[in-house]
Amino acid sequence: MLTYSFENIGSQSLYEYLYHCIKTDIINGVISSGEKLPSKRSFAKNLGISTITVENAYEQLIAEGYIYSVAKKGYYVADITIIEALHPLQASNTVQNSANDIHKHYNTIIPNNRCTITQDILPSNDNMHQPYTIDLTSNKTPAAMFPFYTWSKYLREVITNQSDALLQSSPSGGIYGLRCAISHHLRDFRGMNVYPEQIIIGAGTEYLYGLIIQLLGRNHTFAMEEPCYSKIRKIYKSNDVPCKSIIMDEQGIDIHALYKSEANIIHISPSHHFPTGVVTSIKRRYELLSWAMNDKDRYIIEDDYDSEFRLSGKPIPSMQSIDKTGRVVYINTFTKSLTPTIRISYMILPINLLNLFNKKLGFYSCTVSNFEQYTLARFIETGHFEKHINRMRLYYRKQRNQFINALEHSPIADKIVIDKADSGIHFLIKINTNLSDKQLIECACKNGLKLSCLSDYYENSIYAKNGIIVINYSALSSENISTTIELLCRTILY
Image 1 (cartoon, helix red, strand yellow):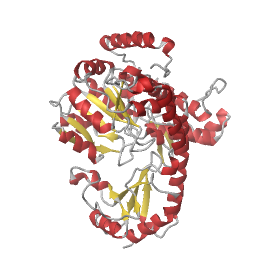
Image 2 (cartoon, rainbow, N blue to C red; image 1 turned 180 degrees about the vertical axis):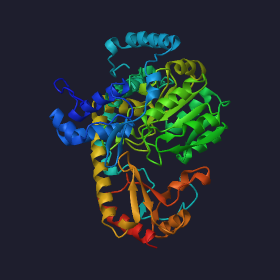
Image 3 (spheres, one colour; image 1 turned 30 degrees about the vertical axis):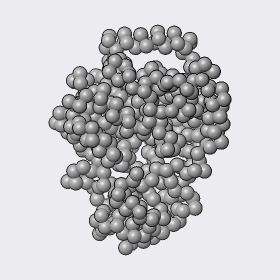
């Protein structure tokens, strides 16, 4: 039986340490693909830890695709043989030399790699006027949860102490102090080691998509997941780039369909896909990296839009953190973690694209005001952003649990199946109904309930799955959950 020592685990929890031990042994081939893992009870007894610790470690490994479970049989190691081919790869000499140059520049600016901020330095026209009692499509942050006091405190501090810097032009990539604060946050929270210079700040992900198109060129074919967040597809098409939609399965985007599409660029959300909630397995991630490596013009755009709000287990590691050949452009935003009205997003360019960006697009001015950039930097580096994320995660977990509990004890409990409830701030409800999706939405609208269905997010209706509602519960409060359940019951029992 597998045996691990827990004597020197440092600051990690027991389940995190066990998860890392098993994951490392799987990657290194110590535990073979298809091999059965010990049962939770016997493993816990052998290691002298609780069963729940083993269960949590197994659940994290399942979420990332390293293992899978078979009902009444146990846990088995997934087939991840492709990792063995890609894992030893190192960055090319060109990429490595560029990284070394950045590293020297980085140490010149900030000795000992320490970064501080010094004193010197419309909705659609459809139903536009429809009054809704409850909106289950909104990602609005509850006003009571936004840290107004702390934010205004740092805004006043920035205005008082950095008035000269506030009135100076921002570099094209954004204020260095904010890029540095984000770099440290990503290292601590996501295990990503990136230089501040690789980070490009922009006013929303939509603006950053436009920069990527200009950077990579309109002669490439862009592909996205089918289904996907509809605005992504619209943005690419409005920028006159050829687009393909690639169907998904339970492991992520279909790799065979991707090869057949002849696309060069793929836009994916591997840590938590919207709207399906699918988490791309580790095997599929390495298959995508292998796809990208097969052509010098291929890149992966990793949209990590709500990675902070995985409500069970550890955050899923990013694809950027396992990319050794500079093929992943990482994008994230503060619109989910803070509020949609703070239009601050960022992307991380691989070293080879960073040099191209500086040469080709370095003339652009940063589209986020210095006031907001310096304030957010202070908010992050003083630890308040981490505290805010932890507070929001607890809040959303409470809202989700209360909402699901109410659904499970409602008159429609026997007509619904709840799916993907652990991976972020939305989940799916599969409904046993004779209504079409269009009829379902119209009926909900009459009852004052705004809904969206999974089928709404498909470009090709032939692939659409019907009878599935996408529930975004981030804007719900404890006080209106009962009203929401009542309106859902009226709609589904119509």
